[in-house]
Structure formats: structure tokens, C-alpha cells
Length: 127
Image 1 (cartoon, rainbow, N blue to C red):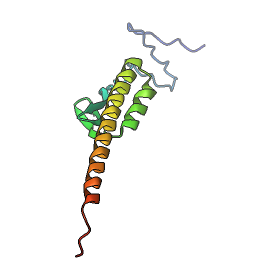
Image 2: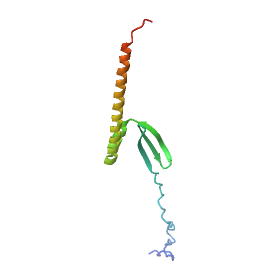
Image 3: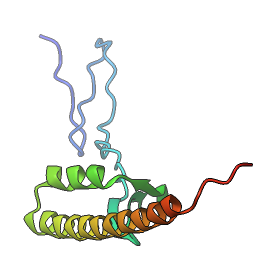
Image 4: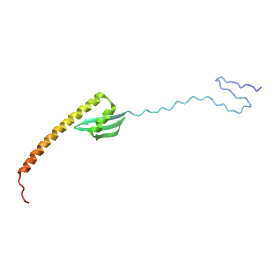
């Protein structure tokens, strides 16, 4: 029977004289590399001065400066989010904008009718 390996005070086992295996000291397990969480992403859909815009930032970095978008696209984006309070606010803004546009269109129709009436009153002059 071969001699038993001797143990040192730390608990590492010394190999027997004829043993070819190499004993390595215990290593501390490495900590997993910490991955930095990405900075917060903020996407903003805004309405000001009759125009809808979308912008995006990640942390302090501007990913997209305010870019104009159509009202239809803004309404679709908010509808997809499904946040009732926000959706209602957007619908109110769109309804008010529609009312303003209808008033402006009626005003322009009236103005156009007046200009066409004046034009009809003017005789044709040969050139």
C-alpha cells in the first residue's frame, strides 16, 4: 500500500513521492465582471405652437433632437402606449387643433368668395 499524502495546516494535500499530479493552491473565485447598466432612455412626444415633435435622450446624450411628426403619428404612438390620461390629453389637443383648422378654412373660403366676387365685377380689358 502506498503511503498516504500528508496534509499541511491549511488543508492542502501534498502529493506522494511517486505521484505525478501537480497540486495547485486554492484560488479565490473571481467575481463576475460588473456590467454597467445603460443610462436611462427618455423619449418625448411634445406639442407646442401647433406642431408635434419627438425627441430622445439617453442619459445626457441627445439621440434625436426634436423632429416634427404628423399629428396622426403622435396619436398612434400615444394610443399604442395605452395610458388613458395621456391619450385623453392628446385627443383634446387634436380636437382643438381640428376646430381651429376648420375655422381657418371657413374664414379662407369666405375670403376667397369675396375676392372671386370682386374679380367677377371687373370687366375684361384687352391687353
